[in-house]
Each structure stands twice: as C-alpha cells, then as structure tokens.
Image (cartoon, rainbow, N blue to C red; front, side, top):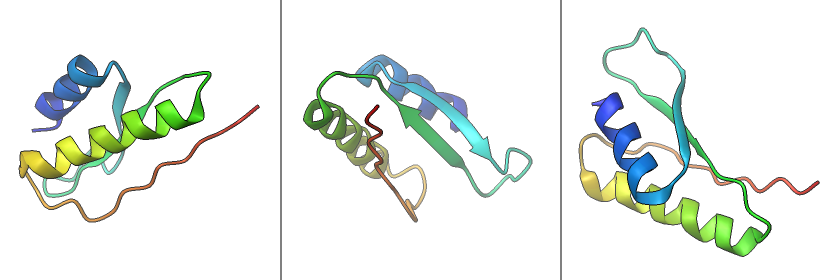
Length: 72
C-alpha cells in the first residue's frame, strides 16, 4: 500500500513522498510529501490536494494531517 500511495502522489502532484516513521509497522503508515515553490499559496494548495487524494483513496483511515510552510 505504501509504495502505491507514494507512486500516486509523485505522479499526480510531482511531490517527493517518503515513509518517515514506523516503517516496521504493518498497520500504521506515516507518510510525508514535500514540494518546493516560490509561491506559498500554490504549495499549500498542492499539498492540500494531495491530502484530499489520500483521503479519497480510502485505502486506510487518515488519522492526522499537517501542512507546514517554511519560508527562508
């Protein structure tokens, strides 16, 4: 499931996606998706669409999501 979901995120949204915790767990997936943009609004919208896709896929229950924008 993790590989399929990461592949879909990468292909549809051109984000980097990776399992970031609990890799040994068979019943929990902690996934991060990141993007780089010069437009924070665009980045936030893109990541929200990615979250929406994960929810709509209904492969598992989405327990928590967080979108964080870092500005340097």
